[in-house]
Image 1 (cartoon, rainbow, N blue to C red):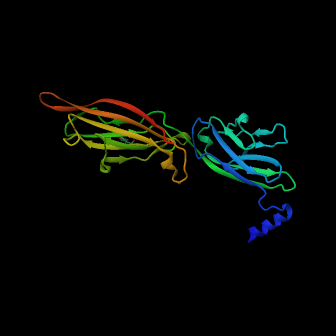
Image 2 (cartoon, rainbow, N blue to C red):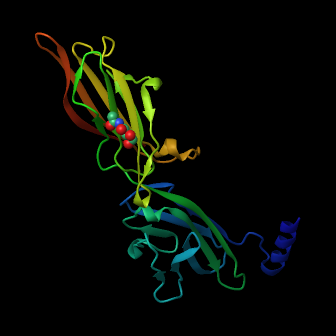
Image 3 (cartoon, helix red, strand yellow):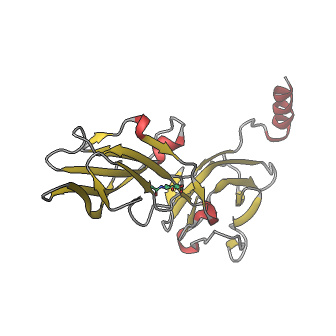
Length: 271
Ligand SMILES: *[C@@H]1O[C@H](CO)[C@@H](O)[C@H](O)[C@H]1NC(C)=O
C-alpha cells in the first residue's frame, strides 16, 4: 500500500517509477592473496551518473564521480587495496586480499538532477586460507607389541574455514567408535586447526601381511561449508599424511615399529 503510494509520489516528480536499477556482483569466496573483482551494474534510464560508491559494512572506501578530478578516490580501510587502474564506475578490483577482506560489500549508485535517484545492492565475500602443509600424525609411542592398542592424533594445518579430518586404516574408513573428537583450536586471525584421534588395536584384523597402513586425510571444501545452494566456482583442497606400522619378528617376540611417516599432498581443483 505504502509502496504504491511512494511510487506514485515519485512518479509525480520523475514520471518514471523505476528510473534507476543496481545489481552488484560480489564473489562469494576468494582465496587469500588473490585479486577480487566486484561488479556494480546499473541502468540509469536516461539520467546522468553522479557517483558510484562502494562500502565495506557501512564504511565507504571507494567512489567514482565522473565530473570530479580525479574521478576515482579510495579511502584507507584495513584489508582493502583498491587497484585504481583496474577499477571504474562498474568494476572494482581489490588486490592481495587478506582474511580481513571478508565482509559485506555494497555499491550505491546515484544520479544527477532532476531525479537525484539512488539505489544500492550488495553481497558477502569470504576469504579462504588454504593450509600451508599437510595434516600431521602424532602418536604416543614408536614401538608396539602385537596385541597393543595404538593411540594416534591427526592434526590439520591452520586454515579458514576449518578442515575436516578422516582416518583410514588399510584404506578402509575408520569406525566411528574408534575415533576421538577434540574441539577445534582457534588461532589469531581466526585460523583454525582440528584434531581427530584414533585408537586401534594391533591384532589379526588390522595387521595385514605384517603391516598396518594408517592414513589421515584433511579436506577443505568451501562448497560443503557454504550451506547455501548458490552455485559457486569452487576448489577443494585435500591433503593427507600416511603412517606405516610394520612388523619384525625376532626369536622370542614379534614387535611392530612405526617405520615411516610422510606426507602426501594432493590438491584437487573442482570447477
Ligand atoms: C591427542 O590430542 C589431545 C588434545 O590435544 C591430547 O590431549 C592427547 O594427549 C593427544 N594424544 C596423543 C596420542 O597424542
